[in-house]
Image (cartoon, rainbow, N blue to C red; front, side, top):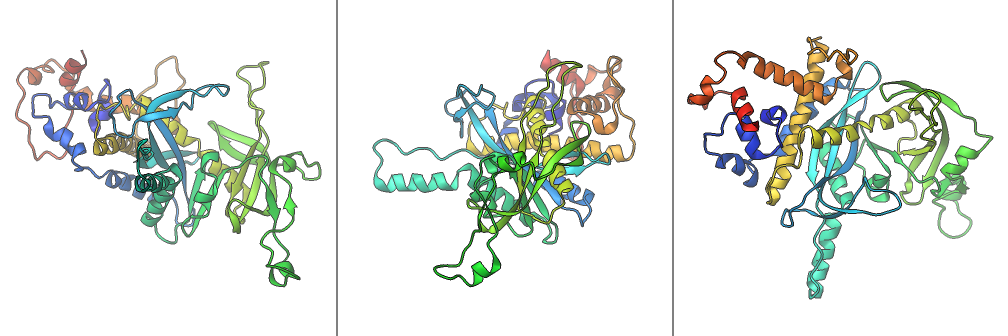
Length: 444
């Protein structure tokens, strides 16, 4: 895992072996570590989750973002690989790419500035069930249909949330933040106890007021009413002149902004059922300009829901703004840590190899955040960049700092002596140090 962060090559298992200075040893154990289920990724993420829980005070909730990502693949026999919709394609054309689907949960590490750093605490391979063959029998079709239900993305997300809830103390409140893809009945109806969901909703969602108490208990005819009169849609609430806007200060994009919001009363949504009261939050478009006098960008409003109707709107807004950190996680994990670049085919390897890279990413950021509290001296920035504070450092800055700490002592006149005649390694050494000469010659 240390070689994952230090290797400048593609994050294949072979390059990691070479970067760790083990290219002259037997490599079969490294592959069996993943292919024969000798690695439990949940134990790796458990250490990160415990540290995040220790950081968040007991009276505050643990905020966790949920989302899925696509890792592109080219092989036709890789487990879980198939044709997926390209999320980076244009809106007017649906492009298909071959890849694997993974589901991630990232917990928020609060900072003193009001921002939060998202740390991955779960990374699950979520391939869809294969389709039945053309000549399949009725029993085979029924089996495939049941497998598709169990392996759909919403079911995997529900299971991951339940597993995370089981690792937390019962008194710890859990807040799940997701985008519009996870704001559905399957997720909200099956939330574990003491768990709140915050997510985006459609602007034309059909909402209802709460029914009158007398209508629910003593109906004149028929069954008791579960829903009240139809309420305005989120878009109608935004355009309502009788509903005033109010300003809320929240941290986003590196600084604090004044957001204009509207909060509704307690409402019901038929998709989530009458026993799940919700609260709607409408956020006016903030807008930004790339330079002075340029065109104003981002003019779309946002519509959010929360299953906790008593949550203050300041926390409601801030928790959802923290969700963007999981998108940053995906970018760093795939570009800097090479999650999904390993050339493996079997199902266990495709579950464990990317998860180990994501866990290494989480541990690196966890160590950096803990070191920042002790005001450890950081590597100076280049001259053409402004000096960054510890909380403003990026993943690339942390990798450079780690490489400096690991390799600075090996750059001397005897650097290549151990590469020419490697000494036998001590198998009981708990902290092996990757060799700089091996890495340089492996990448040459």
